Length: 275
Image (cartoon, rainbow, N blue to C red; front, side):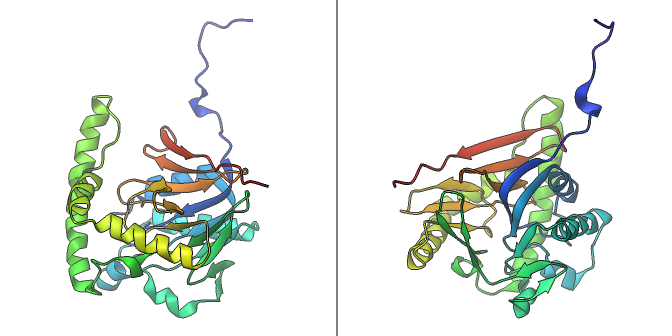
């Protein structure tokens, strides 16, 4: 039977996408730059057996200066705590912005484990060192004041970028990151990303791992240019990305631009291991 109208499926309930593992870093909860609405929407629409929080989840630097904690940031924490109560394993690896949690290695908060670093064994048997990565940032000179001033620049860039992307959406164009473009232009000239990645790849080699999963530099990528698989989760200030592991051990970068409506996916399929 045909009806004289089309059914709009947008209102229908959607089931969360389910993965073997999810890796998220650099949320910066407590800062105005955090895209909390998109992050909360992502967490509502994605589930995993294990969730790794790969550092800079809470921005202690920003909160130490001026308290900012909107309801969406509280909702994100509650989503994670509910997941832990349901039996999801959640592992928190503090970064430089939430370094106050480094005094609590080996403890649990609401079922969330706090560790310095860990090894994730993928479904295909490959071992990945999971670490935030700030100790391999040659540009980080333990200058929290300068980093705080840098945060003001980040907020200004984010505001400009939001205006640009609003105009791009009106024109039917895709999301574009001004800060990512600027970072790549500047950091590629100074070999910043290359040095960072090489340091983490060397650490993975020392741990006899097949790869490393990290955050910190806000640049989501997956490659094998350094003899191990290098995976960076990106961030929730600009790129709004997470790394997902499928049941067969393959990884992909999931980008969450517009709430529940658009996803870009960069897939990295894991090759089968020789017997």
